Length: 183
Image 1 (tube, rainbow, N blue to C red):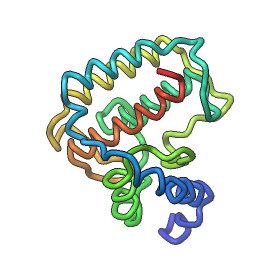
Image 2 (image 1 turned 180 degrees about the vertical axis):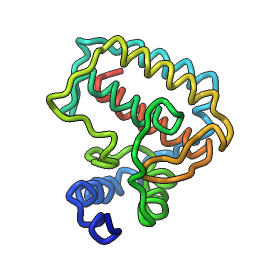
Image 3 (image 1 turned 180 degrees about the horizontal axis):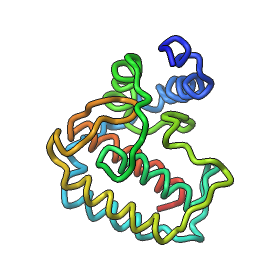
Image 4 (image 1 turned 45 degrees about the horizontal axis):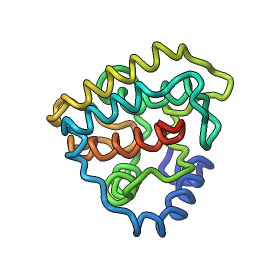
């Protein structure tokens, strides 16, 4: 898909609106330190929060069910660690401006992002809850140990990232979806 055509994709446009809408809030929040992901404190926090998610966890916003959310996080967090084979959806705009806005500048994930497409879950698709939860715990543990550039494959949208950038993105994404289910 050409760069110009991809910029006019409805999901890209809606994601742009979500990011712009979040600017006032982003200016008020404390920046996220990507290196904190690799602390024992964060390792313990995410393990506890993931373990607290149950089949009965009530969705606070959005449309995903709890099993879909876990699978979505597995794809998003595990794809660049070799757990899944996700397509490269990046282009010059996502590897530069998109990465700068979402990874480097924003302090939390905006509500309404619809990219990358490889992380999207069809509404009718369901997953085995216990497997997805165990898989996410395994992926987060693997990510916590992945402290070198060589440990990470390129992100499907943002391309090559440093462990610090991965740490920030993982904190933002995990926090967003765990809060979505009150964890």
